[in-house]
Image 1 (cartoon, rainbow, N blue to C red):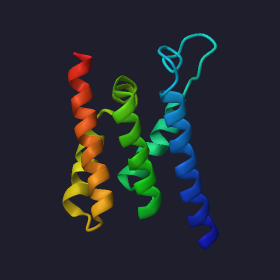
Image 2 (cartoon, helix red, strand yellow):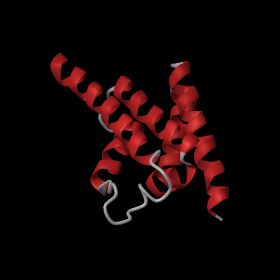
Image 3 (cartoon, rainbow, N blue to C red):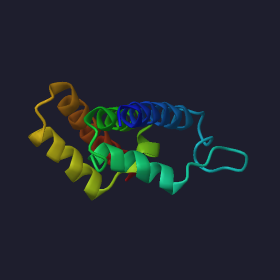
Image 4 (cartoon, one colour):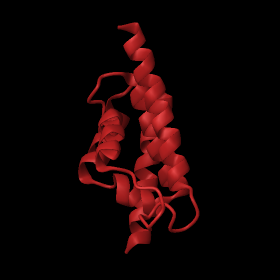
Length: 123
Protein backbone atom coordinates (compact mmCIF):
# COMPACT_ATOMS: atom_id res chain seq x y z
CA UNK A 1 0.00 0.00 0.00
CA UNK A 2 2.76 2.47 0.92
CA UNK A 3 4.54 1.78 -2.37
CA UNK A 4 1.29 2.54 -4.24
CA UNK A 5 0.99 5.90 -2.46
CA UNK A 6 4.60 6.79 -3.19
CA UNK A 7 4.23 5.79 -6.82
CA UNK A 8 0.97 7.75 -7.19
CA UNK A 9 2.62 10.85 -5.75
CA UNK A 10 5.68 10.58 -7.94
CA UNK A 11 3.51 9.95 -10.99
CA UNK A 12 1.36 13.02 -10.25
CA UNK A 13 4.47 15.18 -9.84
CA UNK A 14 6.09 13.84 -13.00
CA UNK A 15 2.91 14.21 -15.05
CA UNK A 16 2.52 17.78 -13.80
CA UNK A 17 6.08 18.60 -14.82
CA UNK A 18 5.62 17.02 -18.25
CA UNK A 19 2.37 18.91 -18.87
CA UNK A 20 4.04 22.16 -17.83
CA UNK A 21 6.94 21.44 -20.20
CA UNK A 22 4.53 20.78 -23.07
CA UNK A 23 2.44 23.86 -22.32
CA UNK A 24 5.52 26.09 -22.13
CA UNK A 25 6.75 25.18 -25.60
CA UNK A 26 7.02 28.02 -28.12
CA UNK A 27 3.80 29.36 -29.65
CA UNK A 28 1.94 26.66 -31.56
CA UNK A 29 4.10 23.78 -30.36
CA UNK A 30 1.46 22.59 -27.87
CA UNK A 31 -1.54 23.60 -29.96
CA UNK A 32 -1.68 20.45 -32.05
CA UNK A 33 0.29 21.48 -35.15
CA UNK A 34 1.79 18.66 -37.21
CA UNK A 35 4.88 17.23 -35.56
CA UNK A 36 4.13 18.78 -32.18
CA UNK A 37 2.97 17.48 -28.83
CA UNK A 38 -0.53 16.11 -28.45
CA UNK A 39 -1.85 15.53 -24.95
CA UNK A 40 -4.60 12.88 -24.96
CA UNK A 41 -7.84 13.75 -23.18
CA UNK A 42 -7.37 10.76 -20.87
CA UNK A 43 -4.14 12.33 -19.53
CA UNK A 44 -5.82 15.68 -18.89
CA UNK A 45 -8.73 13.88 -17.26
CA UNK A 46 -6.31 11.95 -15.01
CA UNK A 47 -4.59 15.09 -13.72
CA UNK A 48 -7.96 16.82 -13.32
CA UNK A 49 -9.44 13.87 -11.42
CA UNK A 50 -6.40 13.80 -9.15
CA UNK A 51 -6.69 17.55 -8.52
CA UNK A 52 -10.36 17.22 -7.68
CA UNK A 53 -9.50 14.51 -5.16
CA UNK A 54 -11.12 11.50 -6.78
CA UNK A 55 -8.22 9.24 -5.70
CA UNK A 56 -8.15 10.42 -2.06
CA UNK A 57 -4.40 11.14 -1.74
CA UNK A 58 -3.98 14.72 -0.49
CA UNK A 59 -0.31 15.02 -1.47
CA UNK A 60 -0.90 13.78 -5.02
CA UNK A 61 -3.89 16.10 -5.14
CA UNK A 62 -1.70 19.05 -4.17
CA UNK A 63 0.86 18.15 -6.86
CA UNK A 64 -1.91 18.05 -9.48
CA UNK A 65 -3.39 21.37 -8.37
CA UNK A 66 0.07 22.93 -8.37
CA UNK A 67 0.60 21.76 -11.96
CA UNK A 68 -2.70 23.32 -13.02
CA UNK A 69 -1.80 26.52 -11.18
CA UNK A 70 1.63 26.70 -12.85
CA UNK A 71 0.23 26.07 -16.32
CA UNK A 72 -2.55 28.62 -15.80
CA UNK A 73 0.01 31.17 -14.58
CA UNK A 74 2.51 30.77 -17.41
CA UNK A 75 0.31 29.54 -20.29
CA UNK A 76 -3.22 30.86 -19.73
CA UNK A 77 -4.60 30.01 -23.18
CA UNK A 78 -3.46 26.40 -22.92
CA UNK A 79 -4.81 26.13 -19.37
CA UNK A 80 -8.14 27.38 -20.70
CA UNK A 81 -8.23 24.62 -23.29
CA UNK A 82 -7.09 21.93 -20.89
CA UNK A 83 -8.66 22.75 -17.52
CA UNK A 84 -11.29 25.49 -17.63
CA UNK A 85 -14.66 24.02 -16.68
CA UNK A 86 -17.38 24.63 -14.17
CA UNK A 87 -16.57 21.31 -12.49
CA UNK A 88 -12.90 22.28 -12.08
CA UNK A 89 -13.69 25.75 -10.73
CA UNK A 90 -16.27 24.39 -8.29
CA UNK A 91 -13.92 21.62 -7.14
CA UNK A 92 -11.04 24.01 -6.54
CA UNK A 93 -13.33 26.45 -4.74
CA UNK A 94 -14.59 23.61 -2.53
CA UNK A 95 -10.98 22.76 -1.62
CA UNK A 96 -10.38 26.41 -0.66
CA UNK A 97 -13.41 26.33 1.64
CA UNK A 98 -12.95 22.85 3.11
CA UNK A 99 -9.23 22.16 3.41
CA UNK A 100 -7.28 22.98 6.56
CA UNK A 101 -3.94 22.85 4.70
CA UNK A 102 -3.05 26.48 3.91
CA UNK A 103 -0.48 25.75 1.19
CA UNK A 104 -3.02 23.59 -0.64
CA UNK A 105 -5.78 26.18 -0.21
CA UNK A 106 -3.47 28.88 -1.62
CA UNK A 107 -2.62 26.75 -4.67
CA UNK A 108 -6.32 26.06 -5.30
CA UNK A 109 -7.21 29.72 -5.00
CA UNK A 110 -4.35 30.78 -7.27
CA UNK A 111 -5.39 28.19 -9.87
CA UNK A 112 -8.97 29.54 -9.82
CA UNK A 113 -7.76 33.13 -10.17
CA UNK A 114 -5.47 32.32 -13.09
CA UNK A 115 -8.06 30.17 -14.86
CA UNK A 116 -10.72 32.86 -14.54
CA UNK A 117 -8.26 35.60 -15.52
CA UNK A 118 -7.31 33.56 -18.56
CA UNK A 119 -10.95 33.29 -19.60
CA UNK A 120 -10.94 37.05 -20.21
CA UNK A 121 -8.01 36.64 -22.59
CA UNK A 122 -9.98 34.07 -24.62
CA UNK A 123 -12.84 36.46 -25.37
